[in-house]
Every structure is written in C-alpha cells, then in structure tokens.
Length: 164
Image (cartoon, rainbow, N blue to C red; front, top):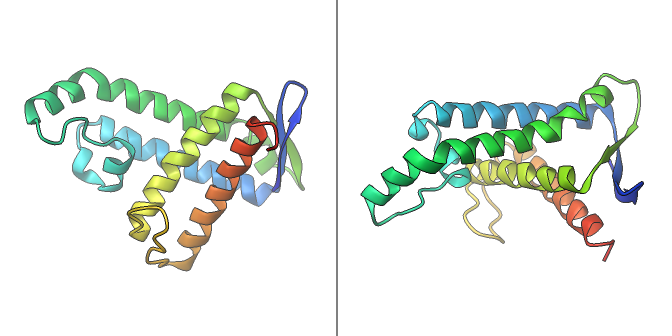
C-alpha cells in the first residue's frame, strides 16, 4: 500500500490486490462478529466486549437498559463502517495489479473507525491490554496484521490532519 494523500477533495491510496483481499476479509469477519453480537449472544466472543463494552459496569439494570435501547444502533453503525471500508476495495481485489482507491473525508473517518475495531479484536486475540503491550504475537501473522492496521490508521489520521 502506498499511503493516503489528499486528492480531488478527498483522499487516495494505492493498494495491491492481495492487500484489498485481506482488508475485505477482515471487514467481513468484523461484520459477522457484530451480527453475532446483535443476535443476542454477546458472550459468544470475548473480543466483542472490546468493541462494544458494557456501558455500566457497576449497575446491571442500567447496563441492561442501555443494551435494549442503544446496542442495536451501535452495532449497525459499526457494521456500516466495515462495509464502507470493504466496498471500494472489491474492484482492486479483482484486479491484476496495484490500483488507486479514492475516499471522501467521511469514508476515511469510517475507515479509521472500522480499523480501530479490527485492532481492538486483534489486541484481544494477542493479549494486548494497553498501549505498549507486546502481546503474545501467536500466530506471528496476527501481530504483523495488528501493526499493519495501526500503520494504515495512522496514515489516515495524518492525511486527514493535512500531512502533519
């Protein structure tokens, strides 16, 4: 991937087909995990608690009320962020070589949100609890993926901040 740069009122990066395929797969897995949580079984995957934490840790009644009133909307928004990330990548994934992807500012923000959720899930899988933790890095590919997503997210932040 060649990083995001301002382009025609939005931002553009160049992705290799294999990179697009990885991000599409991750986005689809995130959407499935969120759908499983929407199905009423939030304990099905502990990583889901990192993405959609309990709003009230010390008040079960307030937590239950929050889940009833807000959880569905939050899960649907997070799923939409993942869908935004994967949509533009499909043509690149099917291509023969590197290709540019253009996103609006709003789409770039959705990308950052989806990548943040993916990083939270990978952090859970790797045993990363706070910034600076190395995690288990087992399998090693998960650690590489975590760091690659961090690079993409940082690159988007820098592009949105005007390259500073």
